Length: 249
Length: 249
DNA sequence: CTTAACCTAATTGTCTGAGTAATTAATGGT
DNA sequence: ACCATTAATTACTCAGACAATTAGGTTAAG
Image 1 (cartoon, rainbow over the protein chains, first blue to last red):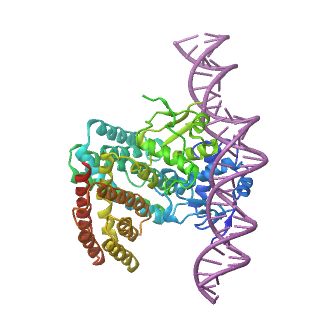
Image 2: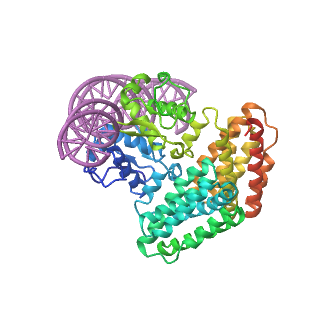
């Protein structure tokens, strides 16, 4: 059933920590985007008119409209005169957009969606590892080695460690030299760090991830596509296994 | 070298055919987005301030700013007080966003980028076909059959035929039941129709695509993942071959 | 009764102009 | 040479008016 919805509370104008949205319109977009991803506003729901909604958020219509343009650009809503702006069906959402992904993980993420992401990783990353094994140059290998060193030094429980993990997967996708895959890296890496953070939020790491990563690196360094692909396949599968335990996926 | 850039000419206010951008801010976003994708504005370039740029486009600052929010949401530009709004490096662009993809193909698309897209298809679509073979239901099979019938009835030279082709690939990705893959479908299908249109722009179709598609459909209907994957692999490879001939990829 | 054309009202879209806040770059003191 | 302070530039936010579009109801015709 589609009904017209209103915001729960005004936007906090106080400077927020950072990352949510440095500017007012960004904060609004974040708030609404997260609400939509959390299922607070359902597809088909229409956001009560610009004037009343902006009024309730205690912001100007300009700022509200600019936020709506952001959501529109990401396929979350659509606005038409007389009809209002309504939440689009889920299949129109750009779920792979890094920012949307962030909104999805701002709340309790849907287990089915997390499973989808791992399935995507299971498809893309082994293939990418194989390509990387064929095309890697010295610079790319150095990036991977540095990232692995970072993962070893800091643990995955720390922010720095998760960033190193992200860098590792990022370096592999970059080594493919494929623009489309590199763009996917932004999404995949976001998924990696979010799910990793999730695992640690609930229990501490049951398994040392370094050996898995090292096998991938060694295969790529040895220019062995088949081995790289297989090693990466195992890595993603184990990661899924860990995640499954901690969030009943 | 990064310099400050200005628009070439004002926005045509007359009602444009359709599809470019139904609203003024959409038209501005389309114009600027296409210009950026075409390399007219290079990464690092800064768009001369809001006031002067909007003035030169002959639009209000509101409309201009809303357009910039769209580009920002897609990772093409970034705005900061005192620094201006500048074009971001290419690796920040959301190249898989359907709208960005459209802008990329609005001009002469980069051959390396087209090759990247085919490589992505070659990775994703066979895997998706395999998953579809495992999980397809009657409704999904019907969608595929209908799409294939549409491709047969209209030719691929017509818009309707290309839409049917799009529907076919779309149906397969939907049949996987994987949200992440379904989102990718929007991008992949855009790539499919754009490249197909490109092929036909230069020479007429050298080969009948129906048998290739039918083999995929039959394998999925038979619940044979390996055969579906292989059939799809061949299909994408042949499509790449055709495209390679007509645009020196 | 169904269908098509028309009108109206509601809502988003666009414009203008003013003032605020953030950030960079220059300035001056230590 | 380095750090705090200041100034200037730019995007950001606000307010209010008017225009353009269209959903939905109304009327007329088939």
